[in-house]
Image (tube, rainbow, N blue to C red; front, side):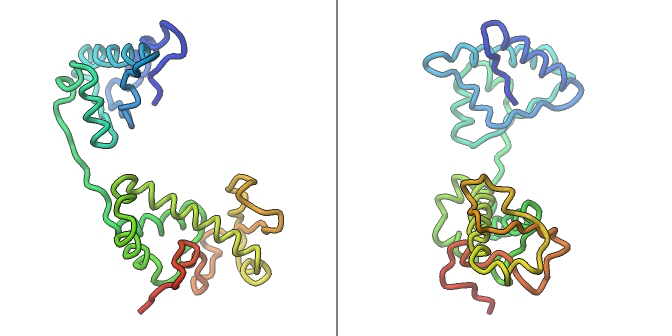
Length: 220
């Protein structure tokens, strides 16, 4: 949600219009700390905050505003203007997803975003691997980490298919290669397409090695 205008005098009306469109409902501002006035050239940001606070005060009974973001940066944001904390007195802290939950998100992302599935045992193996070796990344990025890992694994999957395409693509009918920029694919990588319904349940798609698990997956 962009509240900042591009020229002098455009920020205030833009904020007012956005607030007006949310009256009777909720205005959700994700990564609200992007509004923190910068040391140089931050006048538009300060104007956006002031106008937002004014509109909140003027529409107290017809508008719910939710600010979201990482805890540390949100604390800095609330300190950036003396009127923010009084207008937003309630804080809800959501715990990070656990490694097991992130592995489930990875499986869901592979299925829903790319039409792919994890080999048997891989979801549990990812949970163990991430808990043991990537705690810092899980705390910093959480769900985004899981999604990025699936995207990286899918690129490796496409490269792997290029080496044995005749064997590994004949049962599939959906294209994933087209979902990546050209610099992430090779000319010899075939266009595979495989709607989830067309994937053979007995033939897994994303393997442990696609996620960097060189020792494979322990299915025991």
